[in-house]
Image (cartoon, rainbow, N blue to C red; front, side):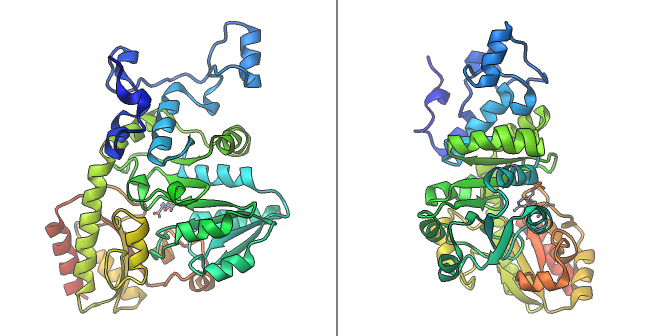
Length: 400
Ligand code: 4LM
């Protein structure tokens, strides 16, 4: 009997997250794919090796280009993101930088949304700009501004939805429609949603990038990333962006941990969403809270767009207190169960202050220009019982 992993496109998302691209019976019944701890692969002859290098035969060559276990992970990730191909990398920044190095050359422009994760902003602003790439930051919610800014010089349109940290959404299908007639490729960072909640390629994006450090790993014990899209572009990113430009190669252990994390992604995401919604509703009703940014609240300005393009409203939220920066810091310091830490998508509920932590790569002026409030706090809902999380928020708010 053939395990259905080989013909997996008919299976549901949750099933593919567990079975896609791997048949245990082809590997002595091992439920989990064996790890290949080999940096190099032996050829039977010079001719076979030369053929592998020339791309004439599919032999593994050297682990910077991929390993058998990595191929399973990449096929599984591609299946989940509805992509032809995927490339696993050593970090989210490794995936983003390998992708962008592959798509741009001096004289090109990147149009990026106003709000980006701090190191992505820094890579564009302090990295690529040094090499003659123009970066224009616009409000990707403003479709007229995009239509009047995009030109044949634009190599990439880049955004996150929801954006880290202020939760602004991009109407991916509408942006894709404007981008499609141009040479520009639309790249969406889907870290906050995971493919369980949102699939940008199905909405018309060309490439999707991820920090797999977050929900995909899910347990705060690895750093990894991936990019997915059409097979031809992915080949360029693997054999140029990653192989030659960044060398951001994922480790064997991290491949295993992501394959393990993917098996529980769907059930974890459901709980992350439930807990985030409980926190958002609790904070929204609290007199000491000025503003809550969560796509699942009816007061969220893009509530309808969230319902249209996301299957659920996610595990992340941001909020501001009726307090200054020092007061907001005191609130965080008074939390007991909720931990003050960057990163997101872990089992533990985490809180952080973007202006001084994840987004400290922006100057004070840049924070304002890029719509990031200096007093904003960001919460990543964990998997604890929501009563315990709400009790912790409540006691710390009580001390304000
Ligand atoms: C954080 N984020 O926000 P690696 N894309 C997005 C991200 O949030 C991140 C990356 C890429 C945080 C890290 C400290 C939307 C990271 C970069 O950290 O390189 O896997 O991903 O807390």
